[in-house]
Image (cartoon, rainbow, N blue to C red; front, side):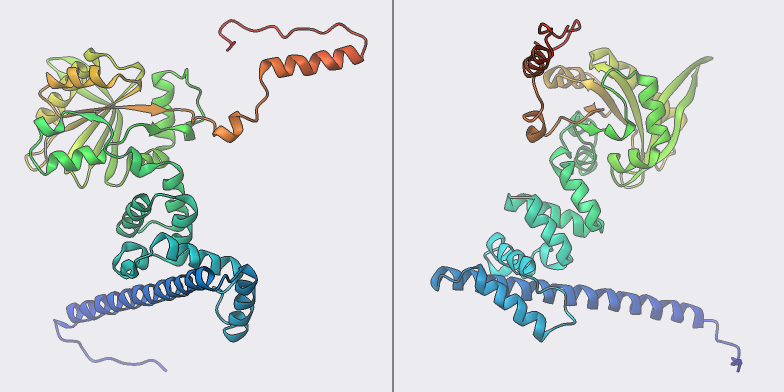
Length: 360
């Protein structure tokens, strides 16, 4: 049966929209409150486990019995496994103060807290990542990836002249926006890749590139054309930053930073400010991405530049984890092994021929 409605007053639509917004907000607050209560419950259980294990010498066998009894009592809840009880204990160890309820960790889902506990040892780092995860609405996988990539440790590490060239608080916000180094391992390129190949890869994988740049970056164009007195100039990559309210010119150099690179980028920033920037935009910022850079050389070069520029390195390949590098056989071990095999076959041991440039 179709319902027939009479004509609604003119203000009805706005009123309905307001009610919907309040419902959504109330549901979000309820979800956050319920999550905070759950995390506090887990902290209390973990803290009591710690106290009993210290004073009564309870072992993990008691925890195993506790997990079984709690699962029997609350079969609809999935958080009472032995492993989860140990995570509750770890939570209480990591945050010994009951004021955890006032920290960002209490507002994060339990799965996020488990990642913070298992992936980070330093309490200050845990809190920093928890605050950023809450502010940015990071998913569990995003939090894990950002910890693996040492995202927060790289923020604000680029060499810049922003403090001298931008007003506060724009200068600090811009400085914190840049990283060093930037990780481009998703391109699948070797360390000898040329600038054009890197640029092409970044545009092809622009979504991954934007994620690596960070929130607020919007892609404008590649090889962005500028004309000055009949001469053409092309910017490698042009972005707009929605929080900084300014254009960002990115130049790639597949080599070590040289002072003249800053002069070229300074020219591009002047051209963008005069030809592209609108009156409402903040001054254009430059980011020079180099294969390597010497910090002092970059600082000296930027001190004489009148436009805001940052210099950072990029990485096409990540360093192998220590556990992997130590497990790889050396050339000498390979030669010895091959020599043993050849001897068993009746042949003389053969030395591997090193190519020029191979590590000794």
